[in-house]
Image (cartoon, rainbow, N blue to C red; front, top):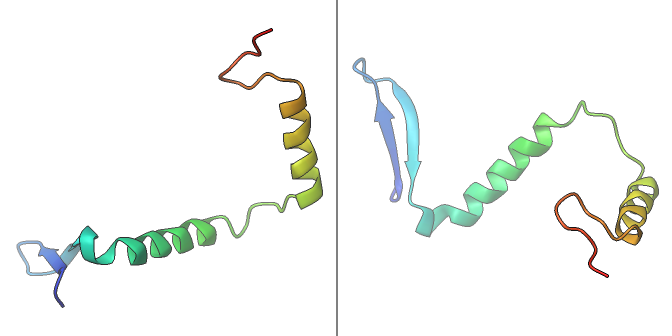
Length: 71
């Protein structure tokens, strides 16, 4: 397949793959997103409304972890 190359060890076994990012960037991003989602499948769910309220409260205080509110 054009734009996909395999690296092999001394036994000829495939050990890695190299993709042409110009050709497969979006597909690789989607693949990685899927891996990340699958890795979190056993994490506890967070209620959407609670998460939004937590974000709003942190924003209303006017101070983030990286920036201080300037008066």
